[in-house]
Image 1 (cartoon, rainbow, N blue to C red):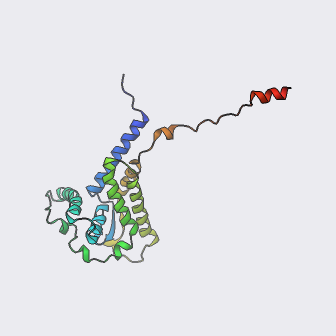
Image 2: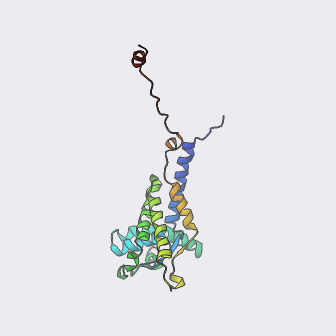
Image 3: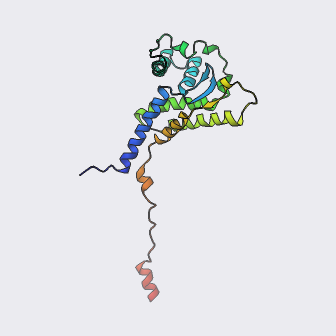
Length: 209
């Protein structure tokens, strides 16, 4: 007989695959949006996070470069079929003078900055154990982009520095939601039946007397 997959097994695998897709989107640095940042214009949560980490010197520089390198390799192979040099990595992302850049750009978009932090951390942790960090980070980014594009829309802005959302952002949002593990037993289980109160035998006999 063929093995019939249970709903619990299907949903657990779905969260696992969604976490892997979200990890690829973040660490391969698929463009999700376009916002001004310290390094100029950032199109991925990894770029926003890396520019902030380098400028604040929270993490060692080799660790930040290790986070950037997979996306740089993928971009180099797609565009020019070459593998970028490790030493030239900061020049590729325009991060050489990011420490001297003004922090006003990041402070004006705190939601995007915080969401990028959570998205990168959630993508890394989600490979080991899927959780809600990726979803929380993606929602923060979406809210920051909505706030920037609609609520604080400037009258005149350069087209090259305008905030833009790519269609891949929808894929990242869906994957972040699907990466959350849900207990399907609690979802599919109906509400417990309420016990019906029955009269005691002693009280019924007393009424007959």
